[in-house]
Length: 262
Image (cartoon, rainbow, N blue to C red; front, side, top):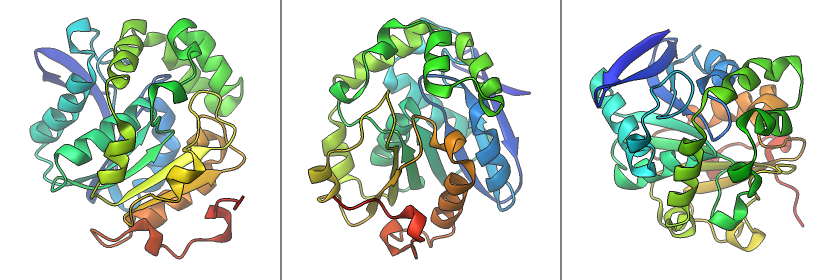
């Protein structure tokens, strides 16, 4: 377990591998731990980091730091503390919102973003995220399978207020405008059977900017990195090896990446 002090509070993170830096940012249910399979795959060629956001996992619980603005600043401060100048971000749910927001704010620093389960508006998030206990949410979204046990055990560590504050802040953001104006190469991923976050509307997918590509995992729910681990990790690897600034639409997409055309 690694930890640093930021804002006078303990921030927990883990790191694997060597090479260019890559940061995984978790969502509303769980912690850094469900990224382990993706981190292990990426660590063959990258230095893969993952941390617990304010109020989650083993990072300190201080309600004054739960805003989306402070979660974004946490990533900025983390990078500065470790001397990271340029990075690729992989975010999920809450982490996807943080990653895209940071890319919009610092396009020179964020080389590319893979955003999984991005909610484009508050209505695309199931209200159950606000009301159900975290352990119940983990069972609902992760299922009781051996591969999800570690993630389910981590979920109740979070402060429920951290979830609520971030959802309240999301209601004040225009993620559609952010997504449409993003200049950083971005790969958007959604699980077709995700009960927590609705997929992008098809009319929005058709008008995404050139540097953004959307992929649907047809056999996945909210956690495609666990539901279809090998497929997710192969897509991540293909995205990471693109040249800096290159659109993910330039990927030689395998048949399994192609979304079903309706």
